[in-house]
Length: 211
Image 1 (cartoon, one colour):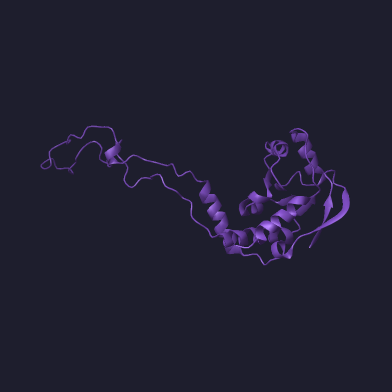
Image 2 (spheres, rainbow, N blue to C red):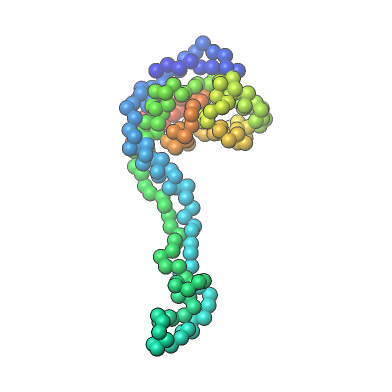
């Protein structure tokens, strides 16, 4: 599959980039995408939720009333979970939600996500560019020239660029990543992908390298 390379102004450069079928032309695997997205979202969870159990509540441990003869249920102390202000039974405890996913499954998921975008013609290739200073207005102008200013976009750079990242940081629908850090969730969440010309080969090499 070939895609024309365009300038940051939106003009065609006359060059074309071939998107490798081994990455962008495979039959997408929906289950691999599901597992990778589930893993990504689980890894974002802090897992710091915590409620106090009976032994962690501040209060007297004195028995409230005698065991028998009151006509009511027996009660130990004020920390009883049945009383207001008592401990919580089986409450949430800190835990790690992350789980391991095999590298081959992750690679298959990323390939599948990219293949979906290629099928939907939701990929644009931009010639290499840079900003002299962080300018959100310049980044908006770039998106507008590609007619993507109203869509959620993911810009894939060959390597980190501070000025470009800062230029897009305040835009709600614009994300910037690098070829090495591209992930299934971000690809599927975006309406359109924008590859910088030199990042296409890096992504293909990354996903096609021997396991």
